Image (cartoon, rainbow, N blue to C red; front, side):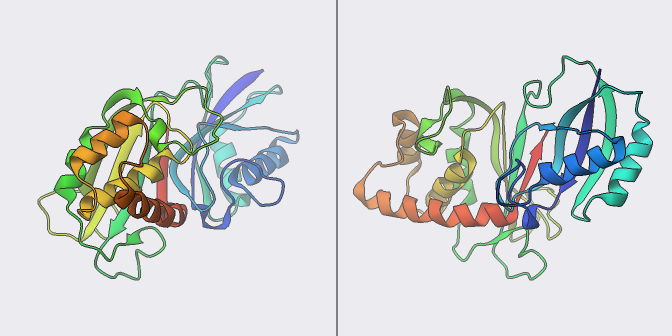
Length: 266
């Protein structure tokens, strides 16, 4: 048996997330179907992580095992791209040590959340149009408090099946980006921003909760001290006044990130 890693990207607009679902088409489903067709045997793939409905991936890694003859990886990529839907693209495939695992061997995962303030019809599918003025310096100061290994239960969806809520964040910052969503120098004048967050693992709904709470800081409806208290106490309810505003922000971003998030996982 030989294990193979496969690297690919996808536009998640038409999919019910990565993982196979009983009542909706998923990226894992179409990839397994394509591999099984080409290799003429049932193939199961395991991804480095899971993305929700409508979430995109610039770089996703998965692995599969094949027990027959060795695979011509270059030809496999070519043929996969011939039969996969146009919103899924395979960029590489290569044999790896059988002990390597796409999910458990991954050292970090990075998410990008895009936001723009100036109306732009070409960004609407991949970026959130934010009508409010935000203080990104304040948001970055608050985000810096997240760096390090700590308990993130305050940003975890209730009822999750996580064995632990400890995560190690190595990056959390808002950076300027241009209209085609590529990050560049912060000194440039632009109305588009990207929130970049990297960690060894993420909890269910964790990142969208972080983004929604940081927006409250940017709008001046939540102080940096209150943000730090939220992280330290493990609850987003710091006062009755903020309870409603944070709830509204997070509810809104549940929709925003599903429509316009690029998830980079490797």
